[in-house]
Length: 132
Image (cartoon, rainbow, N blue to C red; front, side, top):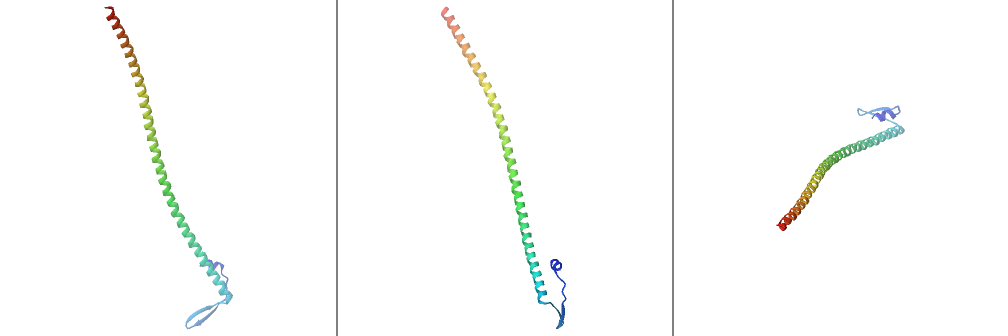
């Protein structure tokens, strides 16, 4: 309504009283101008309603995207935690492998010492047996 008042021109009207009703009469040009203003106001009101609906849709889309982003962030955090746990497990397995290699080397050394000692003892015992 304020749009109509801002753009309206002042016209002189004629007031006619008929059957206890007051009728205001305008000229054809005045009526055309007022009709154009009313049509323009309805058009602008329609545009305003469309824009408000678009804003609502954009807001709802924005909320949905925010929910998706939050969910994706949560999934990323879970994956990062899983990677960290796997890395810890991998580091632990590497340490176990190092310890196993040390133990294997120690066992090989003991085996070689036992073979050498056994060979020497067998040779010595054979020498003692032959020399009797």
